[in-house]
Length: 256
Length: 333
Image (cartoon, rainbow over the protein chains, first blue to last red):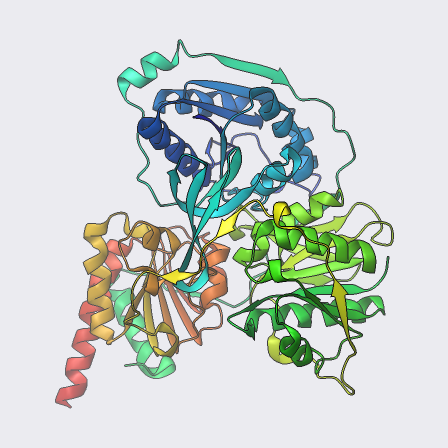
């Protein structure tokens, strides 16, 4: 089974963010980046499927040069090769889901995989739709929020998570695209051997094609959210803080 | 293209409560634009639900019935709504940002060369659609690049952003129009099985007066008893955020957030929860929120009444002891 995993690089989760001078994005210099965590779960699912069924795992991304480190990590964890659609950092911030999905779709079409996996959403934009749009552009079926993938003779049987503790099995033919729910598998670390091997694995770099149409939606302003409530911050030693909290719980919240 | 069309979700023969929120959002947007708001419901045997909808302040209720829509499929919904949107030509198509909508609405927007503005928390003058970036650390304003008079603008609304009880009832019932959908079995490529639940529920978080909730900051499963002890000291229910339930450290039935429960207890004590938006929507209506998190910039402090920016491994045991002591004193006095 030939599997492509679409991954994205995002600022580290605990990064302190500052708004860029144009007020439309964040200041990107001085940030550390890592793989978008939901995509790490998609990669893990792909590697496990390969271990079970054989085949090939290809890591695919459309990101600026900095993503090379994340791709190397994917190769070190066990991906067989990588495709890097090289974008301009500014261009990507100003493009939209459809433009990015078109770049990915072109690269995927050239490979004719059996399965494409993505994370559920990105930690930066959080639009949660690149996978579904990619499937639509490729004309293949998809399913989202997937926590289990079984392969059979005619296709896949996947388990979808729904709200409020409900689940559903869905049968579907391949090729197909699945957006994988985070947390279903334990993420692996790259081994020393894996890191060594990664150096000899191929990464193809393709320059991003110019967009075929202007973006359909525009991000006009990024800003720090206004505080919804006035938070009273309590300080002191742990014992002092605990005492203050107990006092509030008794006199104001009335739960003690 | 004109007007606002709200796509209404239903499950087990009833309108989803959250769908009423999307109707409230639709009415509000229509008012701002001085235009009409209509609703559409898809499925098989949805006539009773359409007449429920006609009791709301709507220009029209469209009922799209087809045997192949008896169960939800992304293909069935995308194709049906593509026909509907092409026929009705609304300027805005609104959804609630549910798991179901996330599964098909991006594909529907793609068929019109558009991009869904997803998980919107507010609609401002313009209209400008506000959504969150970086897991709630930033807000961003979005607008469609083209005039929605030329191409429909697709928007999904975050649960809890609009209040179902602000929905205006109809002065006179809205007319219901049946819409014929052209759908063939071979257009539906997936075969869904019936929904199921893994295990019986043993807890009802929605009625708990005090909830102690744990997040990623707890670091490992072996540390969960620390927070359980705090919950026990209160006589509270233990809850958790998505990563903790995903990892199986706390059962899924105790999940608070967009894919779990929405709760509004007297006290919500968030321990090591950064406050990703998916979590905040499930607890922001709590009467009092106390947050303990080592990162003073964590979004959870945006909704907290009392905040402690410190190491939970120091604060939680101290607080557990202080509560037990306070309770002990109460009994004695």
